[in-house]
Length: 410
Image (cartoon, one colour):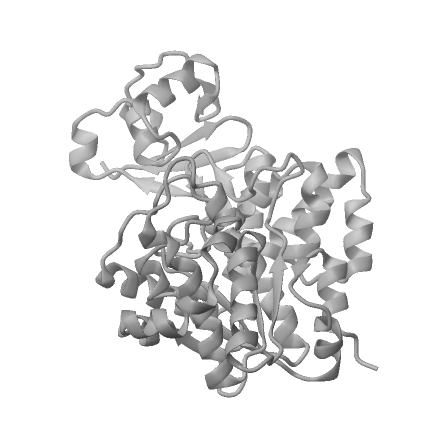
């Protein structure tokens, strides 16, 4: 008898909450259509989305059909869940651009060929809604009193929640209803911060479709052992786009996770069998580094492909052993105009994304956290000179593990 995918998701730590009894039985009994929504709030997915993509991949491997919903319509409002302030308003053009990028990225993680997956954009049905008709059909199914108790709204009430954002839950619930009517979708999945919205959608289907069963499942958020969100660095989010986070930086992020986070990352973000996950995460002291190397390689391979993962691994090992080889080390080439200005090291660090400001760069240098070509920098206003570049290259090291190569052509 084939393994129930619910057991797989539960064993690997994906399942946080389910809306109603009977979901596991349904997944073992029939092949279902399920959906996950991605609002197009940026021009790339990040590692938080990757957890959801992995859950979708497990579902698809078990024979279930993913409906990938890109939120071209809901992004016009912005989900208030987990936000202390209203999201920045975005134009339709920017949202449409981001949505197209999302579709391409998601297509590299899931099999989106004919019959294997369905890709939709809720702009197709949300942007042309008649508001009064929508309120008459959908708004009457929602209790304001109950909505105000939802966590996604409750934490915003002190600072102020606009009526504009208050509509978001209705929109997401309506998405589920549309997908249920059009494709027979019976399950919505999403991050655990989506619990209230997912529950609202499942309840809306039961109300509008004469008790028809619909389910929701929330996926564990990717958190560090200290409870903070994983996938954040000093320079911002860890993106899945190689232009925004290079494969080398991506590899290094996972290579440097805390020992306590290795098991979580291996089980959620790789397809390694669970007995191998348990073996690797049980390693102690220096041996845990072997597990981190495997973790970094496997995740980088998942996101950027085998060749990029091998190049990142080679570059990391070359640097660790005192070399400087490896084509995937993040690299910035100074233009002739930039070099003509005789830039200070802190200016170049800002340019390379190693620091967010000159002030932050100065602090790093004064604290002894910056090396140039292997030598500690002591002058916070040190100017770069031609002699710093061997064959046109110089290597900046920030802290213990962040490297960046700078090139000039003189």
